[in-house]
Image 1 (cartoon, rainbow, N blue to C red):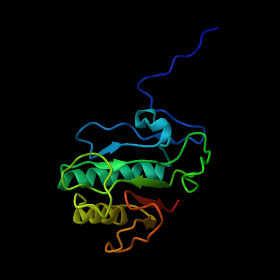
Image 2: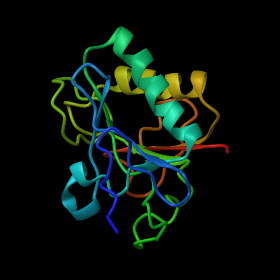
Image 3: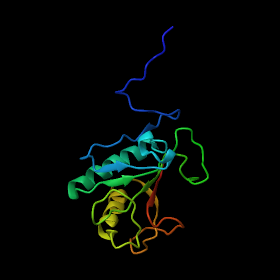
Image 4: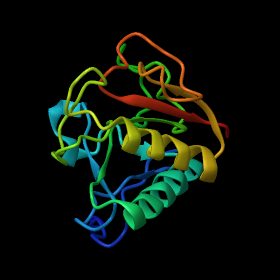
Length: 164
């Protein structure tokens, strides 16, 4: 009896049939980050429902056409579907956290209260999600952006929830 070896060309899939968002090439329009073991390359929270996977890839593609900076894609859902106490809404693969865009293009967190925060670019990302995907809610603490709703702890990332 031989053990099957993982196919390096096949994307990582969970028991729901959701795929892990791939780490992106430099020109893909997005980069990944997350909280699982503080190592985004492990993809712990990066399992997306097919609707969300399509949404992320479409918005990143559209964004790439207009701006060279990449969108930071964080927590989506875990392969084991557990709630770790921090992400109770991230269980169905239809929720994603994204970083606001920084003026300097550095791929690290920025608060919507920071001088490095690019409100116009972040607004455009949210508009792209609304134009190309079935957005149900956007939680973010920059109330000058139309459609967003405030939520505690959402000053350094925005949360997009899609309809399934």
